[in-house]
Amino acid sequence: MPLTLPWLDPEDPQAPFPDLHRALREPDGLLAFGGDLSPARLVRAYRNGIFPWYSA
Image (cartoon, rainbow, N blue to C red):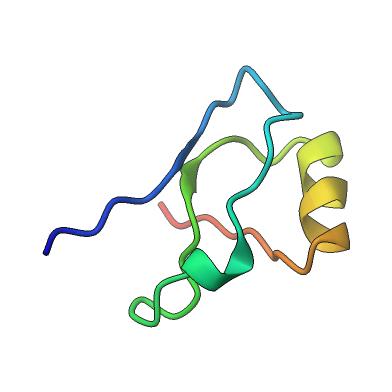
């Protein structure tokens, strides 16, 4: 069964994060993709126990 990850629109930093129980086990903890690393989104993420990262 294919897995689908929610897309976080970088134009909408107030969009809700997915429920934490949807995080993948492999790669460890991947919850969504997209979005941005704006201060507003980072603060909301940290308050929800979500710790964003990015890799090039």
